[in-house]
Image (cartoon, rainbow, N blue to C red):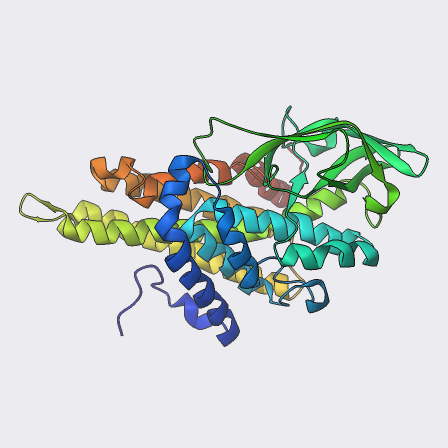
Length: 387
């Protein structure tokens, strides 16, 4: 039996029937609904909001949460496969689902009250309420302990002042999960878009994640009721717990981007005739694509084992850092090399590698830069914090 070009180790055979069904469902959605329009969306700098009801209808938002909150009760390997197939379409689609699920629905579920869960999660799972995650600030994202945004108690309310930057979904969002310094440490708040003094502003002139909404958030004496505070966590444990959830999904997403680049370049290299033979017949092209298959296989096995550990309740943040570091580096290198192998055609968005390469410049940076994750692994090995 012939091996799949992007799955030379038959990793798919290690999945359960349910996991394969989830992957196939999202793959069809990506092939039929995302790929025909995503190049134009990237060119136009537009997130395809028309796909949100379909994404929600497939159960992809909050997919791991209990059914009573609108979730599909999937395991985390299935969630990873969702991220992989969405990012095979575009990092912007995966970012949307990742922020909604891991950075917004998760903290309400994990740190909120039952009233908060029932108020927001079912509508978020249905795509009727969109969330964004306000942690990163303009002075830098790798040092969240140096947070400037502040919330002070005022009677039965909290008053928030400050700003956040590089916020995915910011101008789409109905609510923002905002982390702020308080006299009792960092706490999380659900800020609703119509609260006085709250403003979202689109970040323009992006050359990456163009089919995604990126915003700055501003808080000018925003009054938030106590009922909107997430009461069950204080300190950096709250936002960092959310980031671990999101980073897990990100370890899977770039695999999809790399697979897209390999598949398209493989097809192109068989059709492109130079010096009387297909580009695919040259040793240089075969060596490059063989190396991509090797790196994709390694990344698939890393993320699958990470998912199994997470489903068993044994996943450690250092393991997430290792996979995020490896898989983002793998994907961005493959996308850049695929662009090169396509020649002049590779600089246009009629082919996917340049779009994925540009998107991955953001993916390798957000949710912890490559350097941050290298230092997390280094700290684990040495026991010495080099931050």
